[in-house]
Image 1 (tube, rainbow, N blue to C red):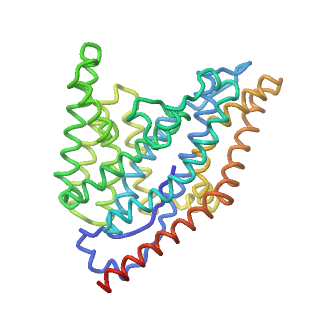
Image 2 (spheres, helix red, strand yellow):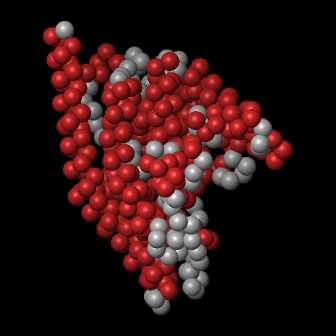
Length: 373
């Protein structure tokens, strides 16, 4: 959970001539949705996933099984705000640098910490190998055939792949001619994903199947419809292209998504989430402007990285020490957000500020050198 919504005008917009004089404004409601996605994620992992994988000593009495919809909302938000960020900057190098500075340092720290956390019960059944650890340091371990040390981090791998796809679209003109760029990806998603799923049992060892599967993951084809919806909402927001054509594109993306997801998501929920993201982007949900939502969004990346493995170890410890499951759950939820606060303010933010200052100094020095030359 690492997006950072800021209002801007895309470089290919009819309004882009005035972009330099247009002040950027945070879209507070999108920040609030990010905080809701973080809360959804914590509840999902500690009530549903933990109960399925490890089990409480006595029934919890209920669970929150809606994690997939939080991921769906996050991917739409990512499509919206990262497209906005790249188009506003107009410099893919600066966009990639900003994303890496925001994501990588804390991620690497948490991966190292997880090597020790995974020695706790009930996580210690499969020790972390050196090869798995090194693969995880790349942020994209599944590309190398390894699982994430913390299972929740698979979404971060998808996010990193999306950045590469987005920059490739930008550099090739696929964001300016977005019907060609996004349309090609959506068509590939509609054809390649169900075809590979149908051929998996009989052809999984075939060379062409392996190549096509690699292409599927590199182009994040399973998630292209969600990213595309976010992008098109931003096009509508900034009045780029025909509103009705953009809405038709969103409808096509929804149809493709539900053709390739094997019934894992409810179409009604998809439409409701799109509506929620749109209302937030247009500032039509005043309750989301409350400060607690914005603050949880601030710490959401640290909570995302730190909550799952550590929380599972603590729940197991408390639960097996005789603490009632609901009390164990409550303690660990509070602890997870406390860790998120501490890590955000003591590690993430100071480190990010220093790296941004360093990057700006390097950029300034390069600009001076170029002017002299």
